[in-house]
Image 1 (tube, helix red, strand yellow):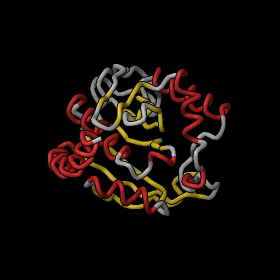
Image 2: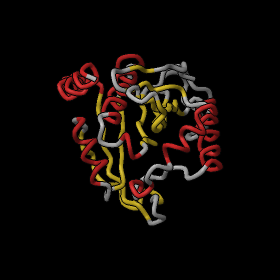
Image 3: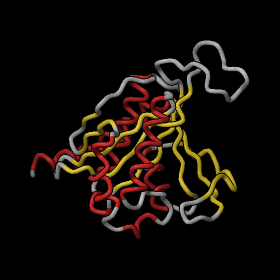
Length: 218
């Protein structure tokens, strides 16, 4: 499975998700739950324990690389995110299709998802830099062919954040999954290809610079 890594920026540090993060994540998720209308976020310690254990089980299978997000300005864990739906195209294909089989060390494609932040960290640049760190690791270290991002079609805020990255809108998959509000969810899909990453990176860098300047001023 992919090696565990810590990804460090100027605003945030993405740390490998572990049981040690549970209580801090419970506190972050409890700040203002009205912000999670379209995002499924664990509520309470029991749900957070199940959330972390499920993520670590998928990590052990080489299917996801989950992180806790530490906001450096406060030295608090303020949310979580992950590189997920990892696919490995090198080597023999598993048979029958869909079986787990043996995976490699370097994913060929991945999704960025399961991202949530406590209310106090929303709108601060924490999400933007977290996405940048994940994209950099996926494209520059793993050399993936594609990153997929998606959101509930009704989640205007999340869709705007994805579009601000420069991701390509691939379309809407109707009745794609169960929504966080227990309705049938239509999902907007976006992607960034390896060939598009340099332009996306150039688009992001000027938007990260003001955040870094604010950190230095503080």
